[in-house]
Amino acid sequence: MNPLARIGRFFLGFLAHTGRLTVFIAHSFVAIIQPPYYVRLIGQQMVRIGYFSLPVVALTSFFTGGVLALQIYYGGNQFNSEAIVASIVALGITRELGPVLGGLMVAGRVSAAIAAEIGTMRVTEQIDALTTLSTEPFKYLVAPRVIAAVLSMPLLALVADIIGIMGGFVVGTQSLGFNPAIYMQLTLDFITPDDITSGLIKAAVFGFIIAIMGCYHGYNSAGGAQGVGRATTNAVVSASILILSANYLMTSLLFSS
Amino acid sequence: MTDMIKLSNVHKSFGPKHVLKGVDLSVEKGNSLVVIGGSGSGKSVMMKSILGLLTPEKGEIEINGLPTVGLKAGKRDLVNRQFGMLFQNGALFDSLAVWQNVSFAAMQGNNMPADEARELAKESLALVGLEENILDLFPVSLSGGMHKRVGLARAIATRPPIIFFDEPTTGLDPIMTDVINHLIRDCVNELGATTMTITHDMSSVRTIGDKAALLYQGQIIWTGEIDALEQSDDPFLVQFINGLADGPIEIAGA
Image 1 (cartoon, rainbow over the protein chains, first blue to last red):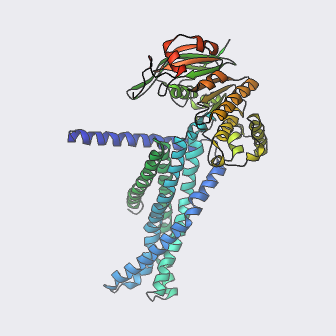
Image 2 (image 1 turned 90 degrees about the vertical axis):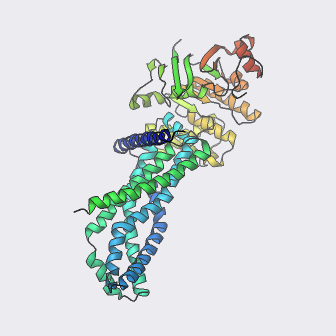
Image 3 (image 1 turned 45 degrees about the vertical axis):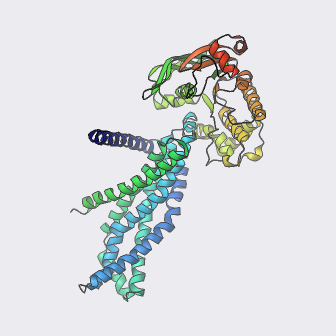
């Protein structure tokens, strides 16, 4: 095939895909805003997305906090600035690593699960059955998952912040010889409410990305088990890429001033 | 007699593939129409177009006199409330127990309280010969035959005036096929509903149907009473009902 035709086909496919995703997101917003609201389903999804993600997010952030403390200590050692460990760990975790790594871990766990569940419902005609039973699939399937993810992710990020800082604290005091009281004081001195809220805003956006990618790929899956597998992979990959690019965009917006 | 379902010149394509090429069909009130046709003839696309799951490019579909193509969501929802549907593989919701599946439309559409919904499920399951001890089971623990019966109980739970059956006996053994066919006939007679069934299975055609239609390459090429099936000398119909490899019907992939 002509290379130019191949490039053209790729871009046309990309534009068509972007258009479909935009329509899907717009449809999801309408479903979120308009009644009926499936409060029980939102609660169930918050447990599945938020509560069951706690262990993986907690472990990730604990070790990330610890590694960050070690790296900053060894790096700062060359310039006799080891004292910045506590403050950089706190800033790094609350502004970036808590929400981003938490988001990536939840993307791997939740986006895949949502895509697999909705994809299976698509290929086994359960979504068609919803429509014939006078239930709008966007309201019943998409809206509760998106709302639950947007509400759960900031809570998970908050937990990640606390446990990540604790990871740095444990390594700093047990392995690097910092005084516990001074370490905590340095952490509290440098951290501001803006650092925490910026991370929570990011987490809410990541929650939206995670849920919408899982729903979009699952809802549009076709071709039996293979199609559901493809939808699951695409959901995780696209959610991860969008989280990283949205993180760059939000960091430049939130911290530009 | 009034037409409950009426299709006029319905066309539906998927990309370059023209699946429905001007389907004209009607089902009178209280009648049971069986649509037969080979794989890929457009039966499922036709049924999904009637149910509003697909939108035809051309033509009109009327339900109880109301044109439904292009209806807005709210009005479409009211039309869908007249329908019951048994999907080919049951399409039961994996995450819900049997009683929640059966009374789903009543709970979601009519806000029926859980205890009443459970009673409704019990009554509907009794109509299809199932005991109440399966109420709390999940679809994964049901056999193929029970799956179909629960699907049938869900289709009739709200006593809809129009019921659709998509290949109701696919994947069942001959005895269970007969059981399901008779259940469908008895339930429909009891409810007085109008039904449309799509199937390849000639035993279903003879047990369930009052009338039959043959869909071939996206068009209805024969309609008539069930009794007229065997007497017809239409070469397409003769080949299909006798399951002959030789005849005018082009076999896909042959």
